[in-house]
Length: 270
Ligand code: SF4
Image (cartoon, rainbow, N blue to C red; front, side, top):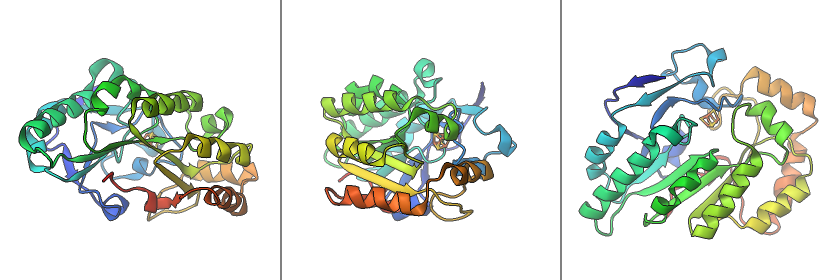
């Protein structure tokens, strides 16, 4: 486990995150142990390890909580996306509570300093460990947890997200958060092959997330959702899942509710 001292915690949002209306990104870790095959973060310049090692390493920003205390003061009324290049609920988070510490520090500074202008947060995760922090999440004035649930079948998820928590554990987390009154987004992003698209769509509709996002799984090297690894593209090609399959799935959902596609779905809460 490598620890680094970060120069800053909140970084100016860029790309689709900025276009979505976020001002800042916040990444407690560098690298990600979930190792998704389609992860664009694996291709970013700060990942100085070989691409094939993605998912096998991470670094801890050891001064992240201290930075959160200091830097939150400049974020009145602004929006933060946590996290853009890692998952804030890495397994190590259970022990070191870095994400929790950042949220606690930021909340405490906000309550003291900003009155009605607290920062607005989106927490993007595949980690059901987020439920540990329900007590904290419910104290923010504007916060949404975006849970990524990109398919309906555990075996399919394991092919593309080999070390991420099970889909059912994410669904359980989604229900616990919703029952506690935390706003939820469900991100079917990228939409992986589905075993039973209609049953999955019905489950999503029944759950009624505040925000529902889908995104075709595409082969791209730039722009939103880039990059898709060759292995992920090969898997997709052999699965029989096509653009038409995706479109039919989304068309069914859209008969019943608003569905945001791609980067249109990544926006902060009011
Ligand atoms: S959880 Fe997110 S950051 Fe981590 S590998 Fe998967 S897509 Fe990338």
